[in-house]
Image (tube, rainbow, N blue to C red; front, side, top):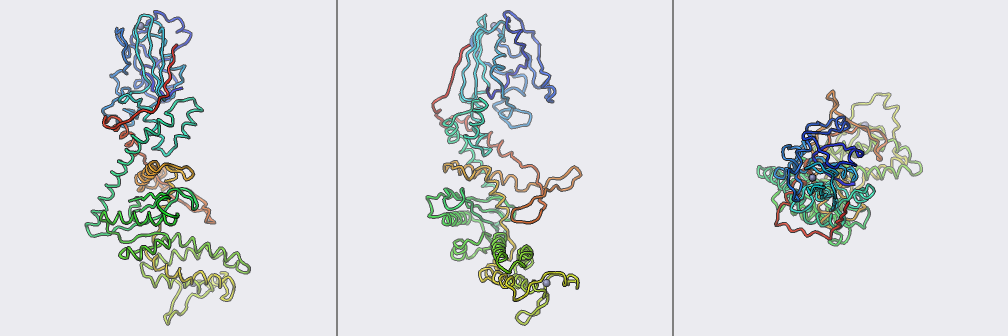
Length: 551
Ligand SMILES: [Zn+2]
Ligand SMILES: [Zn+2]
């Protein structure tokens, strides 16, 4: 079975009628249309070409078969090669055709209608070529896809599709082997990846990166600063990771502005890899001329140290989600101890209060800390108290007598309260709250990191160039989709789905965004073919897996 383009003529051949085909003349304008196709809503006129049109006139010498040029839908238009929806160029539809079915098309001479005396098939990975001779000495060669400077175009397209969709050659080869569909072998795939695919990804990534940088630099030139979020991702869990990527995101547009790929050989530990990536990336952005207002990261001690010492002009904010997660973990541990279970029903409110304290402080550090610690009064049922001579109140509206009576307030001397107090008044937390008053979250970086799993699975080990290319693919994918609007129903209402997150204890509504845009991949495919057309790019074919058969 081959991944083959259909010959431009469409016909259903009745095998019984073709066993004695010698001298059978094919009517000049005959067209066969398979009824199944018509059911599939394919415009018949678009697909059908009369058999006569593909005849080779009275030319007895061997001529390479060229599809008819009258129909733009079926001619390989190498000049435009566009990825248009009507199927021009490389983006035309390609079909899985069983070999026996394919050979049925070569039983009758296309010129005189006499029986074909001999066919010879040669294959080159996914491409099949059929040479035929008829009893009257007509002959021709047909290929299942065009050649691109001597290379079967589909072999290049298959390899490109594997990498550009984040798949691996191993998986696709397994799939193809089971189906008995030849695709480029390992050595051929990696050679194509090296010579065509990776350079094309790099160039497309650079183009996108420079467009983003240009916009950011213009923004800075008009007196603004850029706010960044940063986070690391390791390629395998724990401390044995081979690569670490450190990504910087524009806090306003959520685009990934820059990523540093760090190899384990460059640093002593995964913590050191994170710091190396962070510093190298931030230095690069500053050297390019960006004026950075603040950077939001998690509370990694090494990054906070280097921010304090080396980048003191940039405000360093901490990601509230990371901090809230830590607070919740501590409270859960305390509430599992003896005599502290009264704390349990409060935990979610407490972490919500952390978000609220940061959000409502509007950059005022004192307000943020006072609001956060005020929770120790509220949780005991006290909503008005004195703090350093000033009168303080809870931010909520006054409670009714009924509400005040019903709520399970904590006792100030209970183990639950004393445990809570250690967490709320934790010296490090109170200090760090001052760097959380801008209410910054790196949550959308998590979205990018989960998108990255599509292009670089954590359990698969890639070479450095492959890993870099896959990271760049993930960035291009993410950046092409960051401003995707929320999908709407037919009535125009925003669509959402309900999820039950592991770390939560209730269902929450999440917006459904419109389908992702993958146009950047069409652009990459086009660039690959253009690169193949460039004779200065040297590609040496690895040993072939050609095969030949005569019937
Ligand atoms: Zn003939
Ligand atoms: Zn209160």
